[in-house]
Image 1 (cartoon, rainbow, N blue to C red):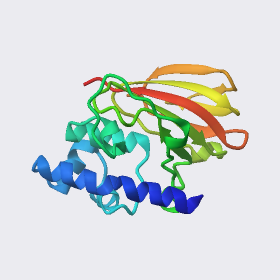
Image 2: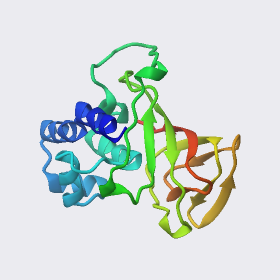
Image 3: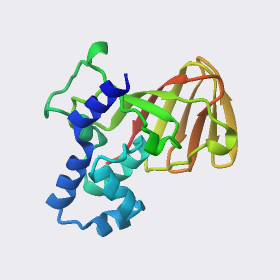
Length: 195
């Protein structure tokens, strides 16, 4: 399973895509750092495929580079008005030991479509301690539906407990974070990022 995920990551080569887009736009690593708020060492690790970036980090990078986040998940560009992603064709972008503080794994659900305003994911969140929640923020809005398990969602300093079947919609520019309360929690997350 771990080797399968590593192979999937290697086939996407997200780091090389980031480097290529950065170079196409004539940006230095420092300039991309300034645009995203991410450190140069972190960006360098991403570009060298040492670190697998979480969704919020990819959103910041894609915004700074002027592309949709789905760009990083495409093996072939498909310009179409509809895509079908079969269950057996989905793949997971798992957190590795080098970013275990993030505590989740995500599967992009509409990666073949190139030009879209929403990004749907299945997200598996690990059980974590309250102090282990990692906060992120990015431009846009998010919708989350709990498919299995219980989780704690923090919106700024406001905690909300969500159980199977519960959903929430929020402005993602406010710092927010999650943690599984009961084992691994499975959720559907849809991120809307205005252009």
